[in-house]
Length: 550
Image (tube, rainbow, N blue to C red):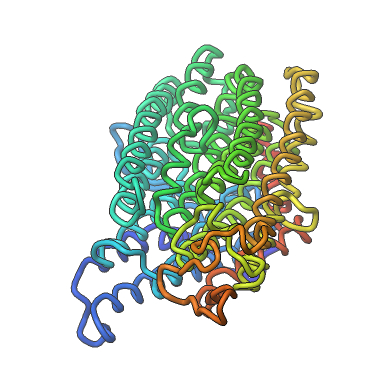
């Protein structure tokens, strides 16, 4: 079933446009603006250009989704297959199915919302031209990662996002930005070198880099030893980007230093590239190698779930001087642990749960980073003790709509039934209860129990954050320092009232509501109607795990 019948050639064009348009837009952003499009100043023109290009890509992605044949989501659609480097057998092979389409839409939506937010609230730093160009190159690389069907093209797209994110952190970030950017680039580049060796091993041993042909072959052309080596090499590169414990330590630093838009894109789409690689490449192409490493992957995943939650609890406690952005970064380590656990089960239930959790995490954590960025702009800090020390019932009394939306995002993140975060975690745990044939049931049921315990820890730290940031410490007024009583925001929306009462903060602005409402609405929609996503992913996952057979 297609909502609108669109010809295959138009679908091909739309997918190619989605991948290439941001790259062309990045080049155009660096050129002088035509006289009729300059607006009040060149900076405004380039920011408007960013909104226009990302908006056009979002519209194209939406039309692509409307024209997608939802009756056959396991079939590659909108495919383009052109020889590019004949000597190496590399082809420009693009296509989408039920696994990649939601990720394309998520990337297009988040990048557009970031461009819209930046139009009104550009982070402090060098030229807006460079900022918009980097965001568009980042979008192009991410979209290409989810659309390409050639192993070497996948690697190129996977690497394409590193340099833009490095500069976004290093030039537009906050304190310790250069050290965080270096740590980010070193970790991810080292992981990528190992991953390239694994991809070349698969291509040379099988005679093709075509991901569809390799998935259909289902590892039959590769010996078990080759599969084991390939999974180890490729898995390390993907695990760094995911990030999997203990390869995660670059993430909290990167998120803490990154500008708001950088954090949203890093958490919302870039982390998904690693888990997508596990599903698209390793599960169908090297199933025997995955079966060998699945228990270890699951063990690292559940350690990450508990570790991330304990780190968040430590940051959230009174007097810890924890940074709210850093806390949400550590929460991502735990949430991506659920995704990896679902993949490690090698079952349709677990993998569907992982893909659902991917999308849910992108929506909810993207919203959380937007909100924390807004709070930091108002208070001048993301320090939890400072935020909690404000009188006037903290955010609920000072910016009630902002406080309510933060509470909503927090309970969505902890997996409240009826919101998007619930289904991915539940399906992942169900998958761990009954893993694929050949995997140890007692081991995976132990992992399931540890993961379930992790959900309790997640609820604990998220509720502590809501209580402290939204409600305040409930300490007697006389025990609070003068700085706690009337913190002045960085950009001046505070408005001191009568003596002894708290300054007010600007509540949600119109541009903020425009950028955040779609994420909140989709979180509710996916939570109440999970079949929207599962109807797309399930047939495609069944086909992948069955070796290309529907």
